[in-house]
Length: 390
Length: 233
Ligand SMILES: Nc1ncnc2c1ncn2[C@@H]1O[C@H](COP(=O)(O)OP(=O)(O)OP(=O)(O)O)[C@@H](O)[C@H]1O
Ligand SMILES: [Mg+2]
Image (cartoon, each protein chain N blue to C red):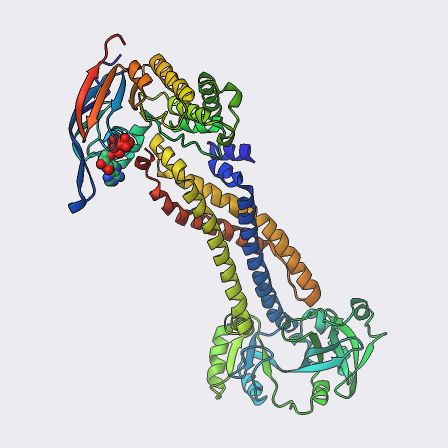
């Protein structure tokens, strides 16, 4: 390592020699940086998976425009939309089709665990609004009390889910009715529920009799191919006389919910704050180590100054130390961070993992912030006055 | 050899502190140091010896008067110039000031590599050579913690000499050493200095060194009160 650095730097690796001279302190510093890294990885991992989980249900459907209630910050949030607006929207020449989407929660008391499935009521006669995997099974929903269930839901064994087929359906009791799952699709547990279920709007209304087909949660619209989505959205705003409704392109609706969850909801803010804390912890640790290291070597630095070394030399040493701490702290940080996320992912069935993008971001961040700490720590070098050596 | 003096000082004054606390440490110093000479600077504590040494050594800014080092005017010189000038000098301090994390060899290499573009292998060989000359051939890869006081000061001598300085400045380099080690160290840079045509200016109270000096300057209360040139050297 020393030789490698000597090659890289083209001079004695003084920073490395200085850092490793006190092994205990060096180890403690690396543990500190690694800890900060782990903190950031776990928080980022959770934030990331939150993003994936938030966007997941949007992937079950295909639409161009979504009309929602004024207070609907997300798919499973807010009031209803009167079905009449769908008919109004269909008056626009570019709007080719519409479907009401009803959403509710279905509790399912399983033998070992009670779970809750976020349930979507759709029109089985309009498979065009469903993602291909689901659309292919939509015909099964024509039967009363039929359901498609989430094979990745929490509390459902993988082998049990795998055996669900139209020939060997799974029957289960909920809300006093017997539902029959004829097939499955890939969803996954999120932060709001344990998984998803898709039924026909008819079945949905019999499960939750308080809901009305005239007031779905959202209205999905399909546009003529090649239609200018923003222009249609603008026209729909004029066409639909209820000014409180949120009319957005489907993609925007998903993006807005993501932003809302990550920046407005306490959970999102807390995790974002966790990342900040991790960065600060790392910054402070590296700064502490480097500035006390500089303070401990003021005499040596003053001697080097007397010998004719300029400010760049000292800056180089401190930067060298900062980069060593950053890089060597990152390696255990990413390993431990990835292990913790994998473990948490197993327990929660959330999509928790260190992605390559995350690893690169955290690595670059660690190196940049370490260098920044080092740069701040070099201010102490001014105290090394060679005239005081005599 | 270049006949011009290596150091030319005329009317040099120096003050410490500001306003009411301002106190003059050097008064109207004028002197010249011949190339290759070995000069001892003596005087009671507080007489200004160290102050004069740090001014010549480019470690303090010249406030008043003329100070030419190797023909360069130091008064008004900017910091970068002072840093560059220092590379022509060798310093030996009362304390060895070795870097605890670097071996003897590495400490000496730092002295060699202050000159830009001295490759590692060359610096390493030069360090080994110098350490051999100061009698530490067996200890080149020891850390300072594993060397005695005298050995550490010898490493410091090697570090000061490895860059081939034109002028060696030493401030009581033997004060922290016992008699034998002190004699060894003094012998060393008398011998090595003479071999290299190096000029030496050394602050000391050590009588054995006085015997070997070409010239003895005495400072009192910031003024030169005696300047004795010895014959036979
Ligand atoms: N950094 C400083 N700030 C203020 N006054 C100083 C400073 N350095 C030296 N002095 C003063 O300048 C005068 C000369 O000090 P200097 O250190 O040059 O003496 P010296 O001859 O080297 O003494 P010693 O033999 O004790 O080392 C003294 O009165 C001292 O108090
Ligand atoms: Mg002194």
